[in-house]
Image 1 (spheres, rainbow, N blue to C red):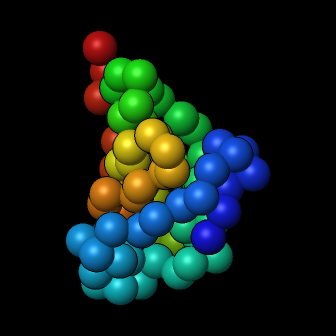
Image 2 (image 1 turned 120 degrees about the vertical axis):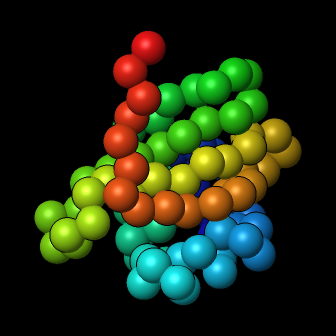
Length: 85
């Protein structure tokens, strides 16, 4: 998988792949999330990306990733809310 937005190869960690299957999140939804979701940086290499999908009833989908020589998607979740600072 490749992200044009992040100009990077995307690796989906086993844990993220398992969470996607458990939460019925498709590869197409993950790609849309990567390419069009709202990005928040935790630091220089860690990000959260979230997006609302109209056809889903489980609030925002989001993932946590590390951006180094490639994007590594660490986990994928649903029922997400941004923390207020």
